[in-house]
Length: 341
Image (cartoon, rainbow, N blue to C red):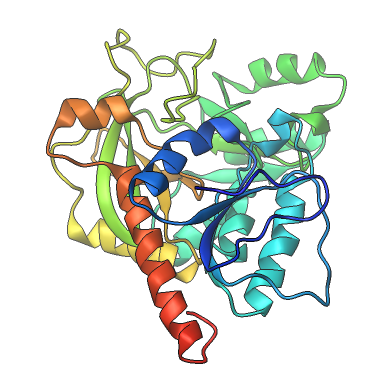
């Protein structure tokens, strides 16, 4: 069982080594809580919204799993990601075992940095121009030189704020209606990006657990860009970017995995960026070229898709078991006089 949620002051501490779950969304925690408790893994809920850290204090023993989301500000947790960055720095400075560390959080809150890191690993991303300010956003659309194109916030989450424009004139009309274009993205940076039309109307979300490929999920994109797979998420009104009727279920597990070379590049990318439980979303165009347009360090899973696919694949159970193994390894290291992995 977990300890009570963190208060506005100190974060709760278990008497013995445990898995500490760092997050700010109670609804997204529900399936992980169930999986941890079903596996009998001791864990503590660190709800990070407000709190304080003592520079002279040492963190408790255990494994720390960072699930902080780029969309935390949409749930009135404006500085949760910033506080989590300091929390992770504190944990890692003390040599604690952190799953999805500070670098993973850095990429979670900046899509532009995601694209830079992906390209460094030979992974194609859509052409993108970053801009801040009304006139520079217009200039970025001209510099992109491709239509139609997407406008998205550099720090978003769940596809919130992503819009499709047919041309620069449509963008200009939209911008003229905004009192403050800088408010479009929390960090004031907007991304103008080529729209890669999915050849089959779907995008694919590739899930990794413990740094290794677990499964791929095909997601119907016909209802818009808000594609969070969490059972608790509901998709509201959104622009329809691809033709086709809405299926009975938006998410389905892919029958086959992408080719090993592509998966290997993604595994190396996540390893280099301190992310072990994460997902990458890509779209394939009519020529079969894959473009990764988003990575998510706070991944969620769709239980309905898992049940329909059969085969006993349960991603959150796999996450809990991975965390349990890491806790056992960290506890052995501590008993041997080490400080965990």
